Length: 220
Image (cartoon, rainbow, N blue to C red; front, side, top):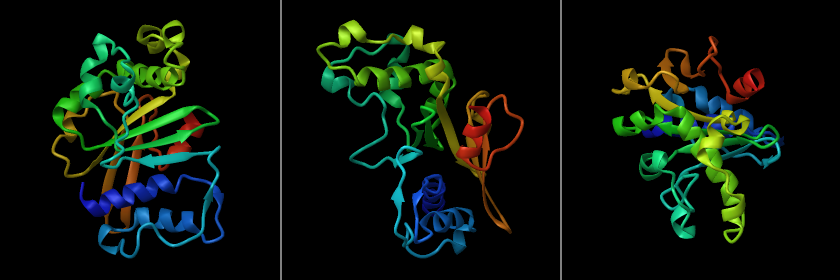
């Protein structure tokens, strides 16, 4: 996915926020995200005063200094890695995350991953459980964690794990599109004469969603 499309994806995610918006910042982001890439010009992010309501939705994107890795703290705090999650621990990092705090839903996105990572995404149960386990255990004081730590096996069937969503985002020219495992949620980027479309597909749902808010409100 080219740089301009990556910016449009970021705009799409940021447009999910709510808050005090006298400068129509969110509307500008939403419009930027659906323009044809050649027409998506100007400063990004667009001008506009905006104070987000962090109780509704939070959005973050990875940087070189701060990648999105739910288990980033393991090495520093000498946290044991479950053997079934070792490859995930070593090889999976995400590009973006959206959190809906009130519903405790975490949506992780990875853009056009390489084939070895696609293979790891195939085991959605383990991946989701490892993510939520890492989030929960991070909140415990390291000195108390041994007596409070939640275990991967228990989390696999938990309601909390069902609220962890891990999406592959890809454009039409993504060479590994046919290799995306069944059961992995996707966001397909498509450009036509009318503009840019972001089609969100979630396993078990026949409809295509056009925003994560629509997906969350429908499924959860």
